[in-house]
Amino acid sequence: MKSLDVTIRLPPEMQLSVPERVAPGDAFEREELLSWHTHEDEGVEYFLSLVAGDIESLRAALAAVEEVRWFDLAPVDDDAFYAYVAMDLRPEDEAWRSAMDGRRVVVVPPIVFGPDGAVALTVLGDPEELRQVVADFPEQVEVEVERVSDHRRLAGSLAGRLTMRQFEAIGTARELGYYEVPREADLAAVADELDCTQSTASALLRKAERALVDAALVR
Image 1: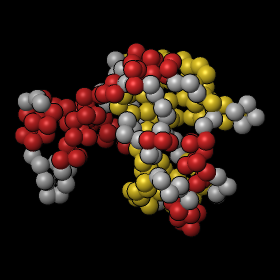
Image 2: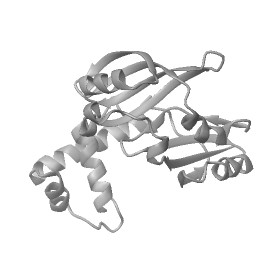
Image 3: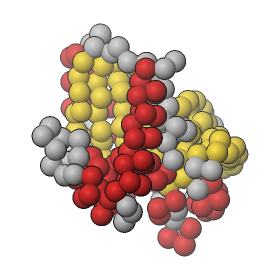
Image 4: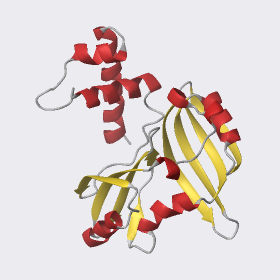
């Protein structure tokens, strides 16, 4: 059994459509889909997600989405909340999920949705089955294989561990090359991009890194 970590990027026409007047914008950092159940006869899907973002902005956005039948939000802290949602099945979602239908594979939660249409998946199965999953994603979906390896990692959610500002800091550092070997950007560059002092940037990164280490090592 192998573990496939893959990131797909959905084109705008396959993403959930939210009216511009209530689109959450920077108020949404990421969604971790923890559990889901599909009732095909009813044409509805129920799911539980942990969301990093502003709860009131996301409440307005969900209320404006036509496919959402009902939802309930429960805050975890100032930057994260649980979302329990019932939503109509969408052909757009079925289009990319069908790559795993009928395959001898297991999707390992969480499925992580980013604000830019990126969806991060971990799928377990035989190597040939995993290769076929990658090949079967729709042509309009961009596919990036992050890693194929033995699955030895502990499951753990991150959205409730990092604040939005910590997410922003560690994402900015990664994009600038701060974590490359050798480094392609220093702390000053990260601080400039975040529009903060170097000491603030350092504190944000250290706290985010500690949370990531805890998520990987602590049950």
